[in-house]
Image (cartoon, rainbow, N blue to C red; front, side, top):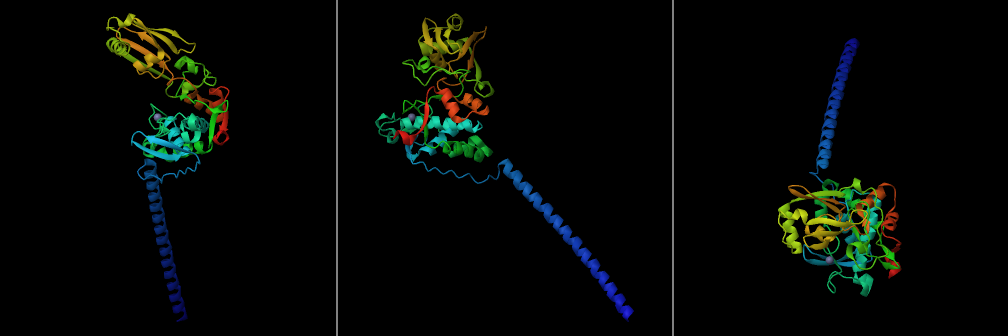
Length: 355
Ligand SMILES: [Zn+2]
């Protein structure tokens, strides 16, 4: 009996052991299956996020600047009073590639803020050069004031990198909060452009008038690594003759343009001063606008079929070169080094010190 019971017990015990083992095995199987499923779900979620189908929540951008500016949005035809740095965020994001080094973005933020300050009547009083006096300080039209992009336009531009780039630009704006560029204790005309082609221009060589002490020609090395450094455009002889006739009142034909169109003088860096068009002498800037060139640093080459124009740099060439700023930042320069390089003899001050 005992033996039987014992055997029974033994058998029962063995059965239980088998049952436990099976349970443990089933449990492990379940756990394994569950783990695999979990990893699969997480992977799919990660992949989906990386592909942009399920975007992360947008970064929160808070602007507490005590200074305000009245901005007219030329696309929506609405006018808003906004914190100065909120406006600057949208300008820096529109005006400079967010992939540029943070110190270049900071230099851009200070230059953009200086420009905005000089336009704001509430900040600069009667000295302000308002875009539309009595109505608003500044507008979002790049052909009038500074470029400006809305959040939805920036999302379209930056795609999956929106949060990364928005944070980078936001930090550049806030870390230079309230700083502007001054000369003789006044805000400067903080002109800037995409690429100088290796050396910036004296303001008077581009716009005429008296020399501006802080807008002097300076070296701008390293630009060739960035986009916009050079460009080549070509026109048929007929197209070139048509543009010249329309813009400069000439009567050139496809047969006469070859001997009637050429550069007469340049500066040492290749910026064109004078160009011959038929019986007229016009400036490099005139040709830049007539032919929609990226800069007035160009050469003209004639072939049997085409007028080929090789262009260096992008923009007017005065003040800070953005790609030059990016090159300086990549080599370890700080934003204030960049600004003092491109704007001769300036000081960086807080808006508060000028009010
Ligand atoms: Zn404007």
